[in-house]
Length: 285
Image (cartoon, rainbow, N blue to C red; front, side, top):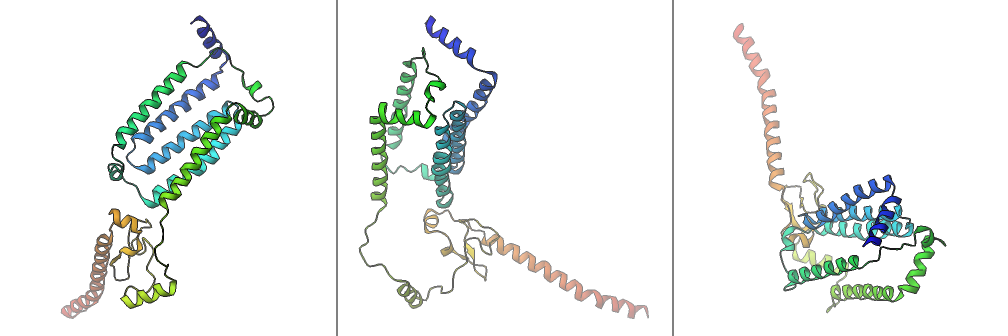
């Protein structure tokens, strides 16, 4: 116990004021971002909070001399993976109602048990960690930061590295298998599709893009045809099946009617004004 306190005192004495201020400020931001990731109601906001937490972790890596891990954290995780999640959520659309539907029976209890087990393992690992001796950044980066990480990954932790790579490959193959759909019939050509559309009497001209004539550029708002009626074909089929299409056609039509009414009133005033002026001149004579 005395040795651990002495080691802690040595570490605290070697920490500068700038490092302490950086740790407490950025650590608070990271914890708040992690909590917002879990408790935010909108998936887009959760993804943004998680991206902010990852950026803070990258700053910690850079401050501790792990330059390679810091750059990888920003470029790979924050810049590629999280932005991919964010764009998918924004384009496809995920609401809080989707999270209430369990696609796998008992998945909430399974997730709770997994989280509890991970927390116990994390606490046990931190409690059994040895805090007596540290090699320091100078020894770890003696031959370069990238070389030091490579020597550890491909020598001491090569078994864990290979298992992690196998898990990632298995997950990628499983995602492709689950999303793959066997085609049971020949795909129709563009000519056949156009002939079928003409034969069925469907809308032949190109449809407006989402938001056109609707004074909005969101993908969940149907485009309005020149006569003011909404065209549901301009919105993604996924959003239509989920019932996430926002209808602003009535609002737009009401605004248009009000504009036409004001224009008619102005025209009537311009037409009536000169006539009443002439009548007043005749009465004065």
